[in-house]
Length: 89
Image (cartoon, rainbow, N blue to C red):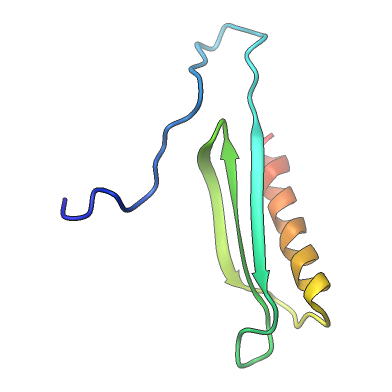
């Protein structure tokens, strides 16, 4: 491979054997949005959900509606991220 430093790194923290009931699974999410970046005035946003620091869900696309403010665009993306986090849970 010409570019080994590019791509996803699937390296979770810890190793669960399936039997330890006290093993802690940590779900984290990060999201961001660009307000009215598209010529149609739709915002563009993306998020990533990680399970024990390994990415398990990602999304990046234009929002389905036109946001009226930067805050609304950020909140829309945060809701999508939290929905994916609940699915992973």
